[in-house]
Image (cartoon, rainbow, N blue to C red):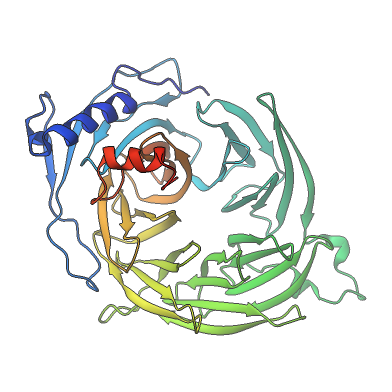
Length: 443
């Protein structure tokens, strides 16, 4: 499957146009000549923890021609405010079913996508040619995690499979290393019984902790299990929530495990020192009035001087907590409003948060460098069904930061977006370039 780029109205040319407009006359944005309708999106809302002024995003839509030679097609070309530019560079319709999980290996330049089938499709960045697929004996790949050259997938048979892959001279090679739990491990002499080894219901999420070589899995059976790669055995299993475990994240800095559930809570777990067992350290719930809605997604945003946790709920709100530096406790910082229906997936990267919703849109939020103030930079529209999963990776441009965002929807489409974010207000493009040239600031 090969992506065909529409170069005549490329994002890079639009960036140059928008950059000149910003530097010459920012007020003339509405006077750009186009045959397409100009939309003002005035319903963008912010965290109530900080005061905010109305924020207006202008989007210009340029319709590219169809490309019937490829299963990938181009979606409308979007150009919002000068602080953020975005374009849906590719869209793939999958008649065999919706994609249920996405993972990106920026190091290897590979994108993985799982669905109801037994095949895990693999695409190459940035041209999105298809490398091929990984074939398993069981389908319904609802969760995928990638680390280095290791890929972890969770399947309908309640097993986790580990794959090794390499990319050399644009040639992709993969091999299944093992799957766990294995039937042969269910013996009378095993430390764990069959019940403790295998999830009773589908595995909904998984995460990998590099330091200890542990794979964490969450399931609709309300449990979380920790698997050690060296032995391929479950070293701990505990009931984490009163309802389905929907998402799991591991902080690679300290090993803390974050889980969320349909019971409306987010929980933080920590491994007992020199043991395999885990203990509950905090339970977080939405501070929105009369809100006890299921939590569908969580995302962790860490840096050298801050740590933020985000959760997306079925009422359309995104709660966030900030970690205290002294006590290491997470204090509620506020919530983001804008989605009209359930938030189904979240991705946090750099200072941006991408949220996919049942309302078919993807919102792009930005957090200020210092403090808890967030703003909605843009609303990405293109899907016709609920956005069920997201993945993103960082790109670096000469002037702006770029991101590749991958989204899948229940409308059976898989889209690739390129998002460009210019420097924040208070630092013009010229001064930003001067600082980079002088070695003051480097992205």
